[in-house]
Length: 118
Length: 112
Image 1 (cartoon, chains in turn brown, purple):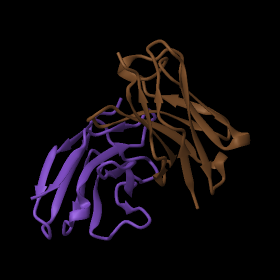
Image 2: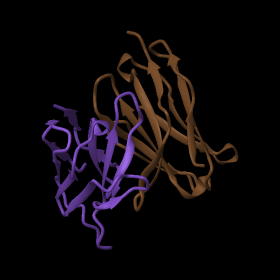
Image 3: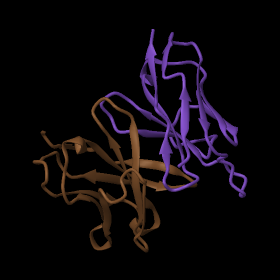
Image 4: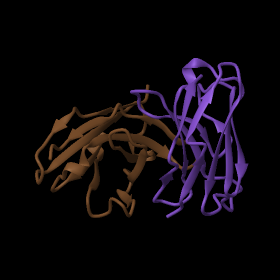
């Protein structure tokens, strides 16, 4: 069974760093892209970026380039999304999803709520 | 970036009636391989998004056949043949032709 299990909710202060995770199981990890999507409170979905675990090819939306970093640890089948300095505007739910352009984002994590009080 | 525009943004529907959502892209999503790189997703209240349609018209595994996707180039449509109560939520199109991918604004389907 394919599963993407994300790390738990976080409450951080502005300026702090954070790394959230997305652990994959039930499929060959290196053969599918893993994408990250943001959903701010009461808002729509925003595509942030994506990584291909086989070669760590990483692409970012211009809106998120330089603000976040996406990485993978092939040994643990885990993808990561990290910030070096959080802002209140980073408060959102973050989803990871397994993806190929030919089959879509067919499995999603449960989401990680990140709260950065202003 | 490719800009995705959905309409309507709100869609009240009586159960058993059909529903239709339009999605337009600022650039053609038709690849030289003949596929349209356009997906549809449904986000039910309080849940993660789920894939409905990929490559413009292919139903994802487990998706009821009352859902269908059509269109090519820059104009796409998601149709629900007969809306059921469980279909409420936010519907999004997303272009997957060019990384950075982009979503439409979302269409909220509600039951009348």
